Amino acid sequence: MLRLEYYLAFAFILYIIGLYCLATKRNMIRLVLGIEILINAANLNFIALSAYRTPGFVDPLAHSIVMISIAIAGCVSAVALALIVYAYKHYGTLDVRKLRRLRE
Picture (cartoon, rainbow, N blue to C red):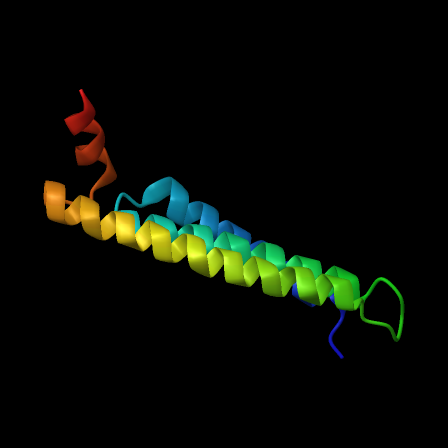
């Protein structure tokens, strides 16, 4: 079994990738993917920390919470992608900066 530090390091790398996507990308689809990466990093942290809390015991509550979180994240991303498709059909662009200019 791998040590806890490996899981936490991988989750930290996922956090960095997700934050990079949110900070630098202008495409709405890439923003949604960045949010999904952040959610997956949080889920990985939750599972890893619940597995290493007590030696030899894995908390099933953490697994059930993560499964619900994955289901909710899937629903949120489906709604977000539906809104993105509507915005593209209506405005003809997925660039966030151009869509902000339309508000003024």
